[in-house]
Image (cartoon, rainbow, N blue to C red):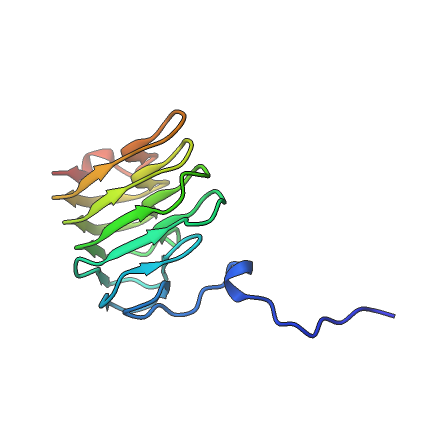
Amino acid sequence: IGLVSTQSPNPSSIGIQAEATSTSCGTVSSSLTLTADVSNDTTCFTINAADIILDCNGFTVTYGTGSGNLSNGINNTGGWHDITIKNCNIKKGSADGLGSNGIYFVNAANSTISNNTISTNGTELNSGVELTFGTGNILISSNTITTTGSSQENYGVSINNPVNPHNCSII
């Protein structure tokens, strides 16, 4: 005889995010402007389409309030192009965990990260902005980034394995 659970799992506990709103974290499939501070125990926003503007409108995005690793304020590991992240106050909520980033882009291009304040926290391998694996033609301008870690390898901006490192501009 098999066991059948009568309880539905919490979608966020198994890595599923609901669609983000102007007042909640989640998956971003179209341009979005925040109207309130938002917070999540792991990753706050996951980009899920190209040609998106995420305008935090001066509000705070708090990510990684739990004790786990690998949380991101804004995650574009899907490689979506033409993404703009602007006017955000992004901060890691917990001093625990490693490998967390304020903004994380993988294989993305033709994007802008501007006018943000980013504060990281954790043990090690944390970055305010991490661009990796084929990311190129990214403009990072007018941002304030503070990194704090209890160990090593914490970076303001980390660029790893870009398509062309000369096409990633930091101003």
